[in-house]
Image (tube, rainbow, N blue to C red; front, side):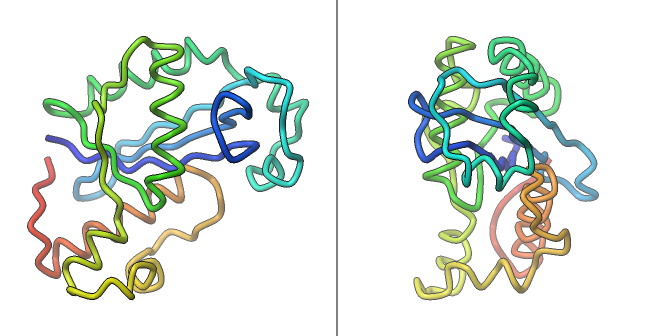
Length: 175
């Protein structure tokens, strides 16, 4: 299995009504050298300007991004090339990031290469420490790459944290 850290930027809170703007993915392995970045044009006319602003793009720029079917196919191909067996989806905010990738894969690719489950980094950390109150502590302690809403940078910082957690004793196997 391969762990893929994914981060998403969107122009609203839910897929189907709003739009995926861009996303990044990093294969968790020493060096963190394999990453993916995708930008997808809107599929609906609804968007929240403040949400889109987080991504750093204007609506006009967003409208010029790639077709969802093409971008999701390229991402599926990257996953197939860069992971062993079924890739494992992992993110900082699983509830948010998962819904977007799952929706777009099913709508525009026909299936989700990640299957039907994923992992949340904060939950892994809480389990390691046997303390549900420390679910965001790992962000301050282990990220090296600055969290700047570039989804590849954010995914990389989260992958750095996973590697540090493994060094602390988390029983997780990376490729």
